[in-house]
Length: 173
Image 1 (cartoon, rainbow, N blue to C red):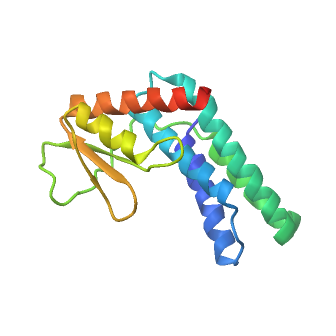
Image 2: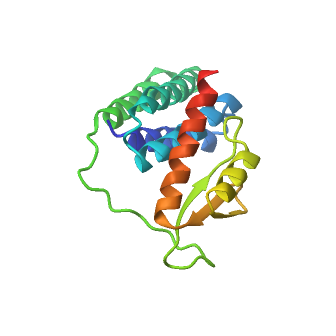
């Protein structure tokens, strides 16, 4: 299952609803952000397959919230069209090879690898910064609220693994 495609389709539905002046509940938006974070963590280290049910749960929360909202506001035809798009996105196979879309980050050396983390209830800013420092990584806050963590490939991979472990530990409590 290609979670990224499912997420993008949900994001498109949100954009369409917002264009039609529909207020999206905070809980739905929070679940969408959490799903994106967990998808990125899973893509960075696919050996942690136990995060898959969490990803699916977040996406189902977003989908059901949006479909109910769309049904109330715009009726069955609108809802059915989006349900079909979402079913298609869920059934899409993961591409064999993903070209990594590398973004240019001004001020970072070419040799540094990086990851962006969006702080939330489960991922506190202080914890991200502390772990980055413990692992010898650099970090800085970006204007959009993400924390950019960067350094050597191995250190960044280690950072992502430890953050995933912390997220799983937080969710089990």
